Image (cartoon, rainbow, N blue to C red):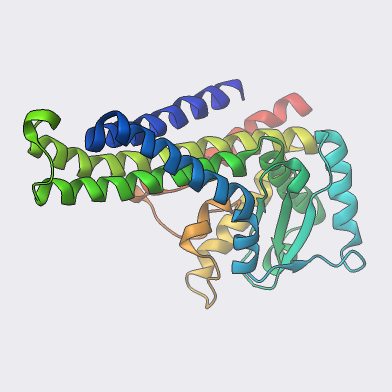
Length: 287
């Protein structure tokens, strides 16, 4: 768990360095300051409003406390173990079997589950999934993911500006270096930023698995839930409905789109087989 935290810090620092390097390349010290202010404004906006955007995107409704009293009880118990406030609980009317957490901090957190998830998992498995999502809340993963996505997006915009600056001859090679080098950097840096952002997301998924297993005291329940959800997700590509949006795919406990081989480099989630194997390995200390 400690290594995942250190890894995330290093990756976030790398993202920030890419952004500031691009800013400096375009405008020297002034460009560096502009990129800093730009990234702070974007982070501020996403910090306060990203949760509302994603919940409205999926037309989430408050989870009925009467119909789903048992879920409220489970979340309350898990929150005591995790020592965090009770989050708002939401329901998404879709056959897609999945769940996600959102919110800028534990005091403003939300956890959403889909109809499909509640239909295919038993109570212990649902408990494991909810513990995983509360792990995200406890570890402030939504804030970290938002910052990473914002910086990566900013790098993409700035790199695009740099490309046009070079192509239109708007920079002095004498002062700014080789134009071809700048153009290559403008093409490579957005890809590097995306890969770093995705590595951060995968690292936080492993951490949430570990935290969730610890809160629930039952890694095997989460492992079983992940296996069922993964199988159901694959069948959704044959069956009709795919509610997930690409922009928010990283939030879900199971990546809602298919992909393998080289495409796994661009996945927001670690390989499911590795997640399940790690959880089964953790189970030994709970026996």
